[in-house]
Image 1 (cartoon, rainbow over the protein chains, first blue to last red):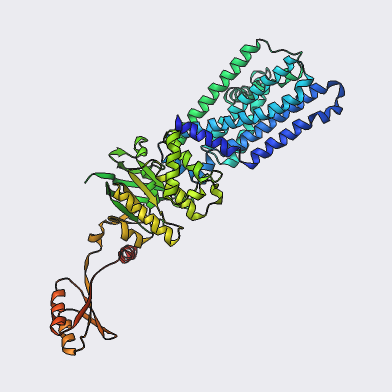
Image 2: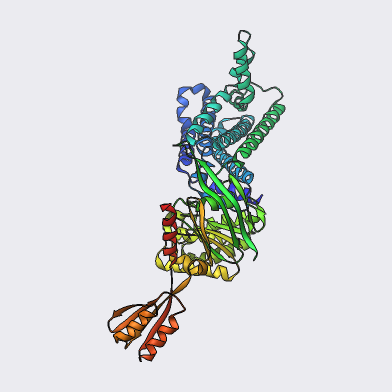
Length: 259
Length: 310
C-alpha cells in the first residue's frame, strides 16, 4: 500500500499545482462569495437563490475539475514518460491505477470541502441549523458523484485519447444525470422495443449521476426524501460498487497495455 | 559465472500504422549478462536497444521469447526491488523539488521516513546536487535532470542498473564523474547494463559489449576478443641507414621517417623482437613500443557497414 499512497499523494500535489484546476476553483469561489449580490433578483427568497446558485456552482466547478484532471491522470504520465521510472520500481499496475484514483478523489474532496466551507460561511448565518446541516449532505453527495466521475475518466483514459475522453466523460455525465429521462424511455408505454432496450441499457449501464443530486431537497426544505438514511446508504453503496467495477476493468485493460 | 540477465529468443514486433505492416524491432535476441560486469549494449538509433530494455523492465511485452533477471521471469515485481532504470533523457515531475522527487521514489520502495531523509541527502551529495535539492525540477538544466535521474536509479541500492545513455547532455567533467560512478558501482559488485552511443566511454569501462542493428544481434563478447591486439607501433631514433630500414621492411614492418625518427608499424606480435634486435644492433634507440588495437568505434562502424552492404 505504500506505493499506492505515494502515488496518491503525488497526484494530489500535481493536481493542485495545475493552473486549470486552480482557475476553476478560484472562479467558483469568486461566484460563491459574490452570490449574495445576486439576491436582488429574488429578494423574498434570498436564501433559496443563494443555495441554488452556490450548490450549482460547486457541482459545475467540481464536474469540470474532475473531468479535466481525470482524463490526464494516466495519459500524462505516459506522454511525459514519468511512468517508466514508476513502473520499473516494485509497483504493480493495479497499484498505479489505484494510486491515481485515490489521488483524484482526494483532490476532489479538497476542492469540494474548500468550496463548501466558503459557501457554508456565506449561507449559514441566514439559515436554520437544519438547513445548514443539509448543505453538508449535499456536499457529501456531490463528492460521491464526482468520485464516480473520476473513476469513469480513469477508465476511459486507459484506452481513449484525452480529447475523446473529455467528450465521453462529459457526455456520460450529462446522460447519467438525466436518469429520470432514461427511466421513462425504458418504461414508457408507447415506446418500441428498441427504444425500451436503448433506454434500459443507458439506464442500467451508465452511472446514475442524477440520484446524487439532492439540491432540490436542500433548496426547498419542505420537500422530503422518504427513508432518507436508506437513500444515502443505497446511493453511496451504488457509487462504491460502480467505482470498483470501473477500476477493475481499467486495471485489466491497463495491465495489458504497453507504455 | 552467475547470470544477471538471460535473454532467449526475445522478439518484438510492432504494427506500423502508416504502412499497415508489422515491423520487427527486436529479432530473436539471445544474450547473457553476468553478475558484476559492465555490459555495453551498442547500436545505431532504431537498433532496438531501448525496446529491449523496456521489455526487460516489463514496460512492453515480447512478441516471442523469454528473459530472466536474477533467475526470475521479466515482469516479476519482486525482482524490481533489485534493479534500477535510468531512461534516456529522463523526465520527472517538474513541479517537485529534487529532494521531493527522490523522496517520492523512496516511498515507492517503502523506505521508512527516517531512513528516506538520510538516503535522499546522501544521493543528492553523490550526484553533486546538494545545493540544488530544494529547487523545483522545472528550474533544472538538462545535466542536472540527468543527475537526478541517476540519483533516483540508486535509491534502492540496486544490484542491476539499466542505464540508457547516462551521459547524454552532460558536459565533459560531468561525463567523467558519471563514468567514475559507474566504475565505483562495479567495484561494489553491481551489474550495469549500459546502452550508449559514446563508444570511447564504453570501451573505457565495459567488460563486454554487444552490437545490435535492426533488432538483430551482430556481435557480442569481451572487448579483448572483439578488439584483438596484434599491430605494434615502434618509434626509434638514430636509425637512418637505408640498409637497416630495408632489414626492418624485410621483417614485415611498415616504416615511415618523421623528423629524424622512424615509426614502424608491425602487423603482428611475432616479428616485434626481430625488429627491436635490428634497431638495437644498429645502435638505434627505442623511444616507445605500443601495442595498437582496433578501436571500438572502428569495430562498430565496420560491423554495421558490413551488414548494411548485404
